[in-house]
Image 1 (tube, rainbow, N blue to C red):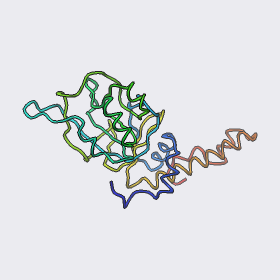
Image 2: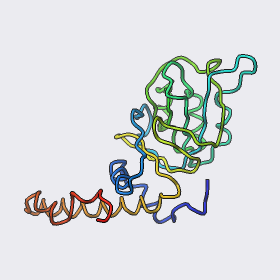
Image 3: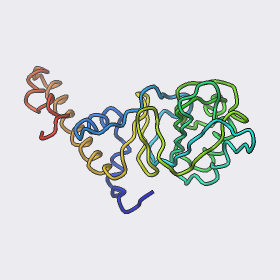
Image 4: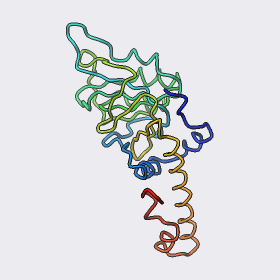
Amino acid sequence: MDGASTPAKSLLDAARTLSTAEISDALDYFKLPGSALGIGHQAGKPRIFGQAFTVAFVPVDTATPGTVGDYLDDVPNGAVAVLDNSGRVDCTVWGGIMSKIAEHRGIAGTVINGVCRDTAEAQEANYPLYARGRFMRTGKDRVQVSAVGKVISLGDVRVKPGDFVIADADGVLVVPEARAAEVFERALLTREVEGKILGAALAGTALGEARRQFGYHTLQRTGY
């Protein structure tokens, strides 16, 4: 994670209150991808905000099989474990022991391009867990870790170590670390404008007029 390009703490504190919808609009403004289609909340607190710790998996090498979860010892407090199992839904790469350890160690949550299991244990620990679904079959002797701290993908979204991962009830998105400050600032500005629109409408202004007055239809367009 590149601390030199990380947004200031005050901006990060404000960004933690943003929804994925608000940040998604800001990504659209800068014409950046980031929305991880098909990955949703499975268990625990429905909120994640943190920087990515990336792990990639490949089919197991039967001659020299590797491990599935030992990387967990290296995930920093406050980071998000982002796991790329190539979208596989036939075996899991995250289970109950890992959820309980991760919650105990202060990891911000887990996002999986694949499936998880033992969701009841994650729910009991209130550990944020996002994936393509749930399936009980273990990944042991089926997949193994191939890389840690490298560029991976959540479907069609690239994730670099240190990128910001935000998740809520509406889904998961990724903000490139190098663009995070401007994206978060834009999202906060959009929230402010939408608040003015809502206030005007509740005060009696027609919704269409309030939207026109505050430029609602141009909020996602570069140059607003």
